[in-house]
View 1 (cartoon, one colour):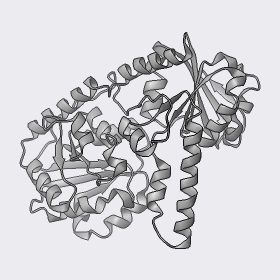
View 2 (tube, helix red, strand yellow; view 1 turned 60 degrees about the vertical axis):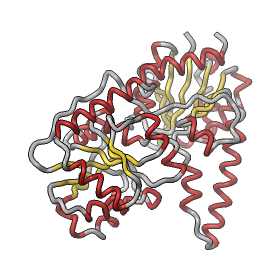
View 3 (tube, helix red, strand yellow; view 1 turned 180 degrees about the horizontal axis):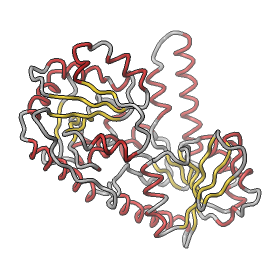
View 4 (cartoon, helix red, strand yellow; view 1 turned 30 degrees about the horizontal axis):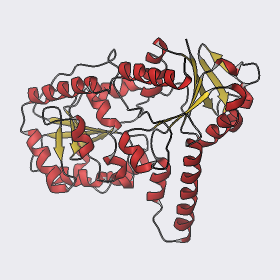
Length: 372
């Protein structure tokens, strides 16, 4: 059996679906795997079964560090997640140890930073130049790899058009062995939930404006985010909605997040039209579907390429359209909401958003590249 090394930018106990489920579970049926976690909290190397713990101070020379006491020729493939300097070191030793190299980019963070720095003040101009140079260097390194793992075909075309190596889109997906069923919530209140990152580019104020415009009062919105400061500042602008919104604290595990999602009727996945959101299925949609909760999402070609009206709710991204769609959802019997959530879950399992299927396909692609 071939063997791979995955070098991730995640902490060991952070529950990342792709790493935990795809790589540390299903890929093992086809490839042996070791996973490197880089941490600022350890000062020496540790091995815990197939988990290799490396102190953060060694990340930019990680292959040099791992070569001490480890036979790196055992690996047929080394995949790096996001870290450009780690990739640079992995590529430096590619010929020495004879492994193939894959590069996974989970989100186009450099492009995101470029959009956040559109100010014409000196700092904004400097940052734009800095991130453009980082993008050029990233593309150069990616083209030295044997396999590129973007978030989708569309993301590759929009954000990485100069990366010409073999591409295998690595979608966020569902674990078919760890799904939840869903039941309608009790009472007349229709419960909505929004999970995931919030910042200026995501324009959540448009969604709040839409809720504020509702004539109905029998709704509630749960919010689960990592960066509480941004959302607290935003919610302070909507004092009338204070009693209608719960901002959840201390949600540190996927199971805890699923518990909260399961207490709601519909997941909010409304994101403005731009290249970041038009090229991928939002992670939050996958989170909701894993709990068989339907999503309210924007009308994009990407969303419609996976979901139909039988599996999701759609809206244009403006206050009036969103408010009207929310009102329509609130007039829908709750058993219909449950059926739509179940349909969404079943659809994702069929369309390669299934980690068990994705692991098999990725293993086959890597087998072709290593030629054995």
